[in-house]
Length: 422
Image (cartoon, rainbow, N blue to C red; front, top):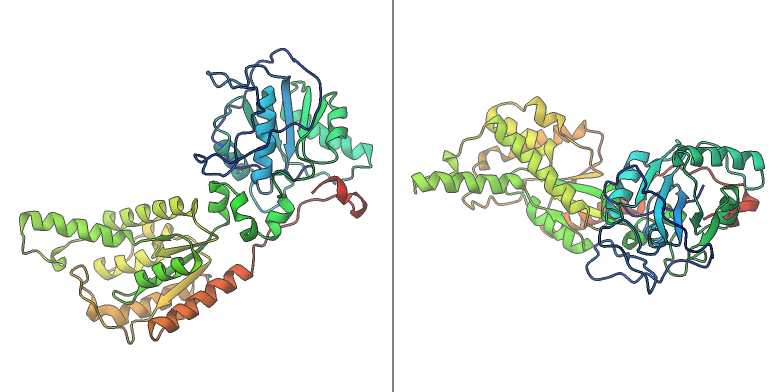
């Protein structure tokens, strides 16, 4: 029922810890101010109230106020506010169950949300994350509807009682009452972490710093630059990344070519790139390593990630060297947000010792055109001098960002109840 969205945590065992004696039932505005420490990549500090400490074994706070706390939300998507809420509960409870309860109409898979939350909160193993779909309507004024939602949450709890409900939403007090638990309001005015799931869905770019690494990787728009040899793909990828202040992923195939040639020259110093041989496993390795580097970069990228080649382009290179492309390379092709194809016309061939296909550039440009035409991804062809190419590429990327993200709306309360949830 909440639109609370936390940051990705690491895997956590599904069993909660044994309850420890409750020390206090007092309810106050619970989370300590969270100031991001320098060593946290996700930008959200652990909310541990002054005077508290974690046990050395990692099994919860040394003096918990509550035996078992509950947090409920859609986490659509998880964001810094959700993580602060979960950390506030973790700092005050011997065990915490976070119920991730989206409706099936939403665009982000439940499994992805659970994985993200577990990754971010791997350091608090007494917090467990349980997913349940909740397709019931939202109506805070209808007791029958409340009963339906609470049945979902009780199922997620597995029959374990809770003595505290942590929430940033106005309905948190009623939810706690229905569970016979103490309500703990955490930053309900969103002053400490001014973000909501609604705001993130409306403008992911504007709230990028409130998203953790795995959530960014899911949202990032991947732009792939492809083209024949010496047509400026690497130059374009680097220029676009510099323009947008984001990451770019170099071409692994070039790195592999250099290694192969270096090994040949250990035996024959006169060897050239024309002596390098290729097989199917080489191209499978290129795809595997390229995608691994891309996925790693996506976690720390801006909203755009610029990629110098991909599996679809690798299939064309495999065809160029081996006469055909293999099923496993073609099957690895993903669906980026945009392709930029660099034309060979008007670009002098620069022989840097790792290139061997000047005579095939026209053929390869045509093969790329053919392959990309049927892939269902927008393609923008870049031609002319570098300045013109870059301007067109920048415009295409800006148009991509301006289009936004198409996320289905969650189930929401009637208009007269909108103040009860963000």
